[in-house]
Length: 152
Image (tube, rainbow, N blue to C red):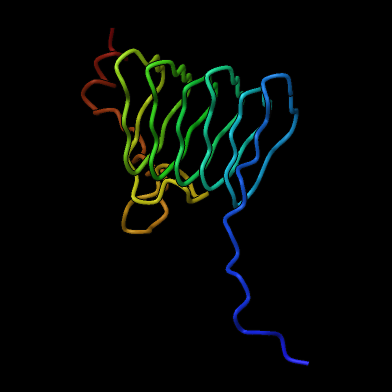
């Protein structure tokens, strides 16, 4: 028959936790939240990603909201990125908003983007056109310079 319409609302699932004794080799992807305390050698994509103080991530991390208190070696892409005072990041950060606390260690470049989560190239112009390197015009030597070098 018909199901009752007053079914309880779905509660938000708990974040997935990778404890400090866990090492993952491979990519992780979820539409939910992840808290990493262990080691990940691979890329991570999540809604909210918390990199714990004991965490060590080697790979690209992509999330709507990223909080780093541990170590990340690789590119960081997030709408909101926060590096706490114990964070150690070696790689580029592409963000919409960023906060870096005093004491955080960061080596790399920072780039603001309206949509840092897009998988397109980093250097795509805001107009949506694809950028291509311009072909330089052929080099031409002035005739006077060419004839002087021939006379000597």
